[in-house]
Length: 640
Image (cartoon, rainbow, N blue to C red):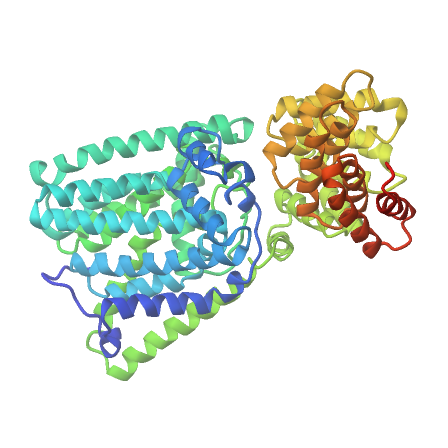
C-alpha cells in the first residue's frame, strides 16, 4: 500500500466516478439488495435484550439508560438511546431495526472509503466495496444486537475524518468536535477505544515517523478516555454479564496461544470466507504442545518481516498492526462473555477488518493499474457478483432463529448453546417433542447447563403426564443455580396445579421476584396465588400493581388486579380502571367485560356504560346467560 499526496482514483472504478452523495446512495442500495433476506428477518438470540424493554420506553427510562448501569444488557448508552428512538418510530417491528442497521453499514463503508481517500490510500472506493459486500460482515449487519458494531463504526470513522481535518488545520473547534464524536463512539461500543492508536498509525503511514508534540500529545486524552471505557466494559462483562468462572480460567501461555490462533483464524476468514458459522467450535487451548506456539510465533515473524519491508513500503505493516491492534480486546487477554461458547466470532473482526480491506483495495489497484480496461472492469464485476452472492446467501441464514440454529448445529454439532436455543424456539412454535430432543442434546454435551435444565422442565411441563419429570429438571436447575428466577417461576407454575403444593408454589414465586425484582410475570402469579390465602389480599394487590407498572401492557395482570380490587371495600373504581385497561389491550375478554359491566351497573351515573358492555357481550356471545341477565336487569332498572 503506497501513499499518494492527494486522494487517488482506483482504475477499477474510473468509469463509475460519481459525486460523494450519489456514491453513498449507491452503497445503501447495494447493501439493501445483498441484505434483503435479513431485512425480512425476525428478532434473533439476544435482540430482545437490546431492543428497548417496556420499562425503559418512557423519558424516565431514557434517563435510566444513561445513569443506571445494568438497566440495559451492556452499558452503551448511545446505542441504547438509538434503540429507544427506533422503538418510538417503529415499535417492535424487526424490519425497522434491520433497515437502519443496513444503512449504518453502508454509511460505514462510505466513510471508510472517504477516510482512505483523505489519507491518500489508492483503491479507496474498491476497499469500501469489499467491506460492504464481504460475507464476514453479515453477522454484524443481519443481527440487530450488533447494531453496536455498525453504529459505532460510523462514529469511529466520523471522528477519524474530523481529526484528520484537525491535523491539517490545527483548529480547536476541529479537535473538540472530533473528541466529542470519539466519546460518542466509545459510548456505543468500547472497541472504538483503539482509534487513537489507529490515528498514530496513519501518521506513521504518511510520514514514516511520529512527532511527540503534533502527533502524540493531542491523542493522550483519547487514550485516557479509551482506557476508561475499556476498563468499565471489562468490569461489566465480568460482574453483570458473567464473564467469569472455570470457562475463563486460562493461563498466560494459553492466552498467548489463543491470541495467535485467533489472528490467523480471522485472516483466513477474510481471505477465504467459506464455512462461516454463527458459533464456531470452541478450541481446546493446550500449552503443553510445542506446536501450539507456532500461532503466536508466526504472527510475530510476519510483523517482523513487514517491518523490514516497511523501510520501503509501510502500508502492509500498518494494515497488519491496525488489524491486530483493533482485535486486541477479543484476542483472549481480556475475558468477554461469548468466550463461553467460542473464542472467535465473525462480529469480533468487523472493525478490525478495515485494515485488511484497505490493503486489499490498494493491492488490487496497484496490480491492475496497467491492465486493459476490460480486465479491470471484469475484476470489479466479479468481486461484486461473488461477494454479493455470498453475502446474500449468508444473510438468508439470519432470517429467523430456527434457520440460524439449525444451520449452526449442522456446522457445529457440539454447540450446546445452539441446541438449547433451537429447542427454545421449537417450544414457542409448539413443537414440543423436537424441543425436548434438542434440550436433551444440549445436556448431553453440557450436563451442568442450568438454562437447558430449566428449558427442558418448561417443555416437559406442557405434557400432561410428565409433570414429575418437569419438577425434577427444575430442581436440578436450582441446584446448579440457586437464585435462578426462571427456574423458580417454572417450578411454581407446576406446583400450583396441585392444591396440596400451593404454599410451595407461593414460596417459589417469591424466590423468583427476590432473585429478579423486575420479573413482571412472577409478581403477577404471586399476586394471584396470594389471593387464595386468608388475609393476604393486600400483598396480592401490591404484587399485581407492581406487575402492571413493570409491564403496562400486561393484560392478565390488569384483569386479575381488577378482580381483587373489585372484592376489596372502597376500591371498586380502581377495579373499573384496570378492567378498562385490560379491555383496551384485548377487547375479546368475555369475563373481564362481564365483570366490568356488573361493576359499572352499581353506579347510577354509569349504568349506560354497563348497558353498552352487556349489549356488546351478547354480540360477541349471544347465548351468554349472565350477559342476558345483566342486560335484562339494566333495562328493567333493577339492581344487578
